[in-house]
Image (cartoon, rainbow, N blue to C red; front, side, top):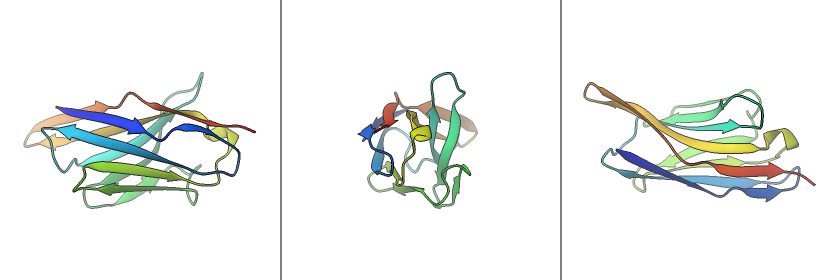
Length: 119
């Protein structure tokens, strides 16, 4: 069992920055993959960025060069640094933890944090 708590969302002007945090707690350490997803009103949830336990990263094309995902395995926390924010980045951002323990897969979600980019 893993609990994920996101924080750091809020209202920011276009061009501004925010840093989201995802604190993981529970019985699984060294989570295989931590991802940030987002869902805007009327749209499907989409992957924004993901990072493996070995710190391999991948990003959606729409955020490449602007967002950076990182993780601190000691603190069991992942971060999403978002720069040069645009109105189209407005969405609820969710943290996801997934992987396998021996042969049992796991997939957990946080409750989400709202990011609004508006002047």
